[in-house]
Image (cartoon, rainbow, N blue to C red; front, side, top):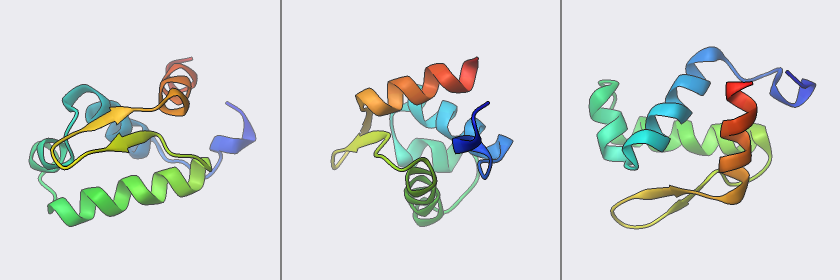
Length: 77
């Protein structure tokens, strides 16, 4: 992987993958047995590390941005 991912841990990739699949911070928090605030903060921290927004947030869901889709492809390589 490129050095841009050096500070991203395996559990961050798992979190990203599950969030993309479930489309909801609430759902991923429940699945991973985390408080919703922790899951939301985790996403913000991941996006800071990557340097761009990975998801577009609405009041009820999250949807991958173009950057998020590209990140997902890179993660799976």
